[in-house]
Image (tube, rainbow, N blue to C red; front, side, top):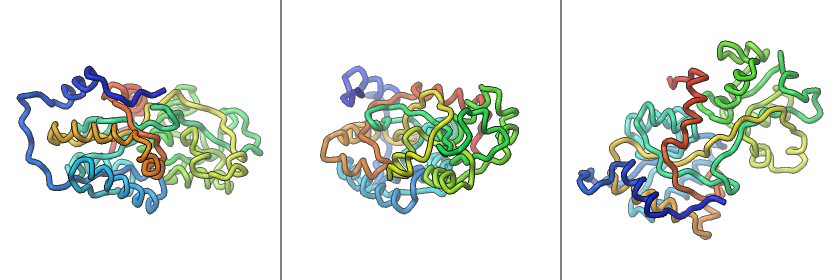
Length: 294
């Protein structure tokens, strides 16, 4: 089980990592905060849920929070880099890019289905002839977004490690590879026969297709190593005292009364403490892929 409480050692470690010391100078207190969210779900529904979450979080921080949703995953990185966003809910690869490009720091990781990790799978239709990954040679696949950890980075690295994809080019194995923009769109493309396979996270069919009959139409032929969960990070230069307050506020969301809010906000259960080194496996995958944000 994930431990949501923060011991004194963890709290002190977090304070040190964020530069929260007695001698740290407090930055000018902002009048409001901007929270960027990664557009991995249906934009209109996610934006509405994000505003509800931001309103509750703002109450705990004593500051209004405005939601910003870019058009793609890496727009979050740019928002943190140019400081138009103060914090962001980032997916794993998004955090690595944000840390490298904008010096963002992770504050808390989300807990999803009781875990702080998940996997990526390559799904096919159950009634197809594809029973093994190698059966997809010369076929078509839908990825989610170049910045998606489970919808591109990890499955591509898996394909490369197995020697199926050469020169970091999916078309050295597949006939065609496309990006759908969201996990739901990828799964629907598979169901309607537009593609032969899709890359998405392990429980994506249950989350987006919902009806048991549609979920049962899919199977998977490969699964990646565990991926650390998404989480909340903050931009460089945000007042360390405010960052500590944000951390504590996120931990408070583990209380039962916030479950409906979190269910709509990416379908998560709560938050747990996180540290930058948790994402080293994601860094290694990105480096192997040779991926660089635009």
